[in-house]
Image (cartoon, rainbow, N blue to C red):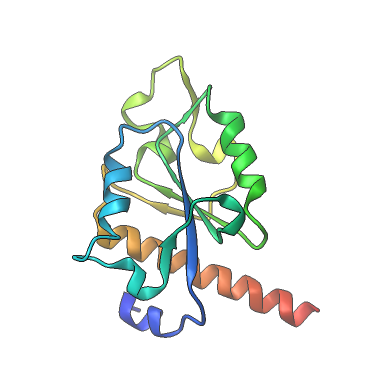
Length: 150
């Protein structure tokens, strides 16, 4: 199923909070590129928010450093349920070029559960939008399951 067909199935906007867990900032720049007029993720309802308390999804870039580990965990707990975590870039899923560094705690999934991985160094804006849409479908199915259980 292509991205356009998936977007037609969406019933609401998706708000994302971005946190850098120790990246080189290339993935951060690509996330911002998705918001520029060229890609315009906001036309699909994908919006970056300034606080995790308003977010549906947590976008994490970079491998997890020892110094930011507790902050990532704190931010994760501030995102209301149902929440999803999307790791943007290869470093967050494998430690990337930082494999042997003493300052790295590990991939993001050693600290918080990850729902979607977007590979690339850095991933293209199209891949980021596609990954967020995949997470969007997952969060909508979680909400439907919760509504059916109630």
